[in-house]
Figure 1: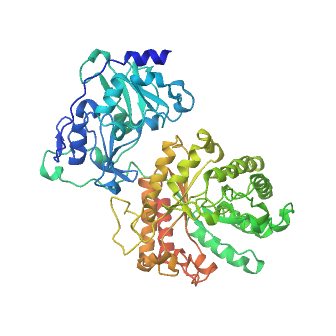
Figure 2: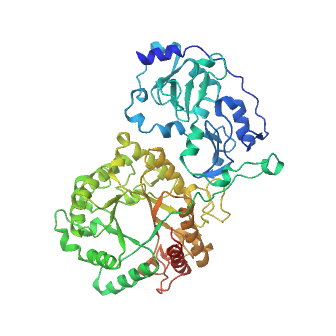
Figure 3: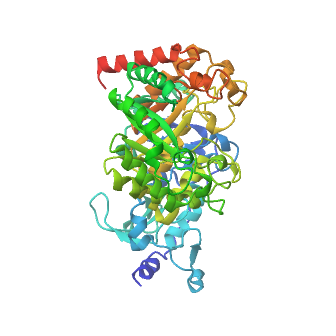
Length: 582
């Protein structure tokens, strides 16, 4: 009843502001000292201008994989991959971002059933289960609608004024918060947007150059958007290597040789992969009888004060269910993880549950987040029961933008899907978010779609760029999980065309590989303050798998056990870190 009263209160219609014709001219705002480019200016003017969006409060700059500009009440994004369509310009989903937790429990955010009797004056959105009416509806429909504000996320309700004034009737949308100001009834200011853009800018660090005033000159008007820039002081990022180990005693000296090299490089971590099918080929066997080779490798790492992340995947045939959407029997996997972790008795710092479950080859034939979710849910308590101090790492998703459930599914789609299950339940079952961040043959400073590499191939999709990891982190933040530590569990560039699958290595020299790896760490330290650990792919596969193995070109040690320039560059990098501090 209270909600209905508020809807009636808002039924006084606000006269619609006529839309201006798009004017392909940039605008300069002396009040704040920033230019607004023609694309943004046309949208700003056509949809309410100052009263809707406020003044620009930043330059046009790169952030989270996109070129953006902050306004007092919104953030404008340019999506170059949608150039020429109405969605080239989009507003950041600020309303959704700041209401993640509230939408789980607070009454105004809960979806309502459709009531046809109300629809004479109200508009219902089945996508979110909320009504829009009165001045809020008029404003939404006349000032950009879905493109500008997105769907309603709440009903209208009374909320304290964020500035300390009188309580206001508000309604949240994906990209905005509408506020009803009765003192301005009948004017363009009766409905105002909350200062979500200013609040967002104050809540996170931005490159100092992005906030520097511009001059009212042709040079500043025509300046390109600012590219990626450092944000604040460098923060520590711990480095590690993916390591391929030999399980036979005859090659144990090789394991020690490479672990010594990992330690000498100044990195603190190694990541190794355990295959379930090799450890428990038959159901119910005593796995401790098969674990000595693994134990030996872990002990060698511990003896060198190297921390260990173990990735576990590849189930035995007996654990594969008939349902092709489920990679393995969850109960059996939980039991296995409980016994495996107990065996190592705290010698493993972190366990990663599965690898790249958005590839069919890593599942049971059909990719489905709902099918994988029970494995994550079963593994987490099993690991914690055996070693409460061990960290559980979310599986790194294979970078790709495909939509073929019997082959590969986009990592962004997969992540959004699994984080949405049961209103975000998956967040309870991992401590660290794992990311696979590869760059194909492209420099880490290139990015999709605003700064494409000029290489002969592997440039036309987001997964071919190292900075695609930013997009995954945005999805994590949008799910309310921005405080989760992030580890890049695989990253690297191959040198030389050792395998046709990674043919882009043909145009990466050993020196370029070194440059790309160290630049990637610089990006993480100066821009990606959300990354704690990053594992290079790979330390020694050129030797382990042979010169023509698929990952030989990624190795920082060549097939003759000689360091490549990339290894020496990593060692020099960690020496510099040690000398200068964080």
